[in-house]
Amino acid sequence: MLKRFGPLLLGLLFLYSMFPCQALAVSTSAASAILVDADSGRVLYEQNADARMRIASTTKIMTALVAIREGDLSDVVTVSASAAGTEGSSLYLRAGEELTLETLLYGLLLSSGNDAAVAIAEHVGGSCDAFVRRMNETARELGMADTSFANPNGLDAEGHYSTARDMARLACAAMENATLRRIASTKSVTVGGRTMTNHNKLLSYMPACIGLKTGYTRAAGRTLVSCAEQNGQRLVAVTLQDGNDWADHQALYEYGFAAYPARRLAFVGQRLGSAPVTGGARETVPLVAAEDLSWPVAAGEETNCRVELTGPLTAPVRSGTAVGQAVFTLDGREIGRVDLLCGETVPPRAVSALAALKSGEIPG
Image (tube, rainbow, N blue to C red; front, side):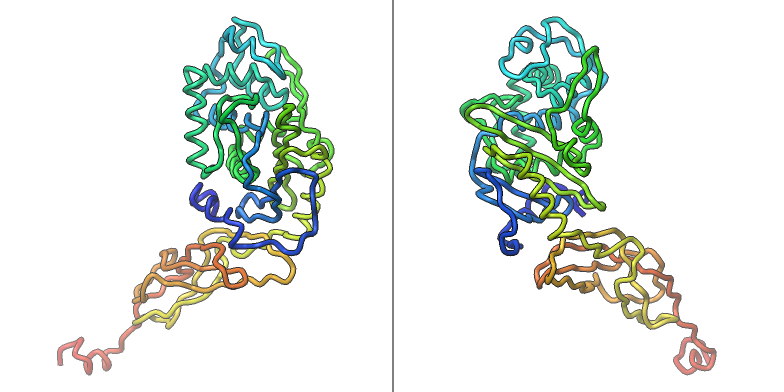
């Protein structure tokens, strides 16, 4: 469902007030934190999640997403003097050096190269400023209303900030991108003549971890955006200004997977009801799900399903015809919809010759 309806659904599902979490069962040392089920967007835990804060190198998640969407991995990038001279964490690029965009992305997400971020921005955007504008446009597209980017690397700057909730939105979108997910989940790699090791220690601490990005500046403190997958369920955690982030993320995932396991509410071909058919050889037709739907459900929560038809059905009805939706609710609140298809073909009811004669369908 999330893939189908995109940023609009993601934004709606992130409204915590619709689905408040259960009693607090986990806590963190962070100034701001959030735990989200990536597929549904349901918030499982939050703490000061809407505070605008510095985000350091977790900025590079957006840099990578924009670059992968709008660039070509095989492009050869010539490193400028300005990129090579960028301060902070570095890939130690040299002015005039040539590397592929893919190599620079590994340097961005694994080694957290600030110089790689500028080289990527200049190449993909034409200039660093133009690329940053595209970062901010993408933020708006994703519903990141409390985010502003001033550079592609996360160095402290006026007008460069986000929130834990917005960074979770970004992470959910980023992990839908197969290329970004592949690079961010790599523990170490040798490419372009460089051997790089991922700064994200959760990849080694947790078998379930599949990304994403660390960050640190003196002003921002330690920032961490991560993603973990277990039993087909994907969660995203964000902590900002957290000196105990490795342990906090592990605790958040332990809590989330245990307290809110994904429940399969519908799967393709599953019968979810039936509908009356006028003038058919059968009085009803089975209705089957056209897609899958899962939702994180805690103990004691109740889900229900109701059928909404687009209109009355009159024979003939063909198998596979879309005729309505199954609407799923959690404790009375809508959480998702699945298109419903006719599970069988229902031909018109056969009329006997005598009945047809009496009804006037056959002249006497």
